Length: 40
Image (cartoon, rainbow, N blue to C red; front, side, top):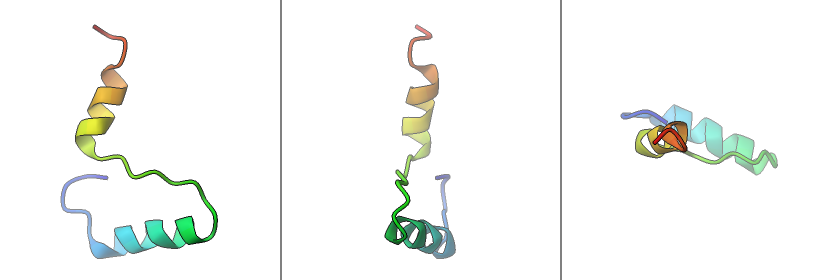
């Protein structure tokens, strides 16, 4: 989720989670760490 994620994006995520979808919110810094994993 990028900086400045609006309430509608967060609400949509919560709606999908309530329906049983396994959604994990990943913020930009964590995504960068994931993408760089093993490259060092």
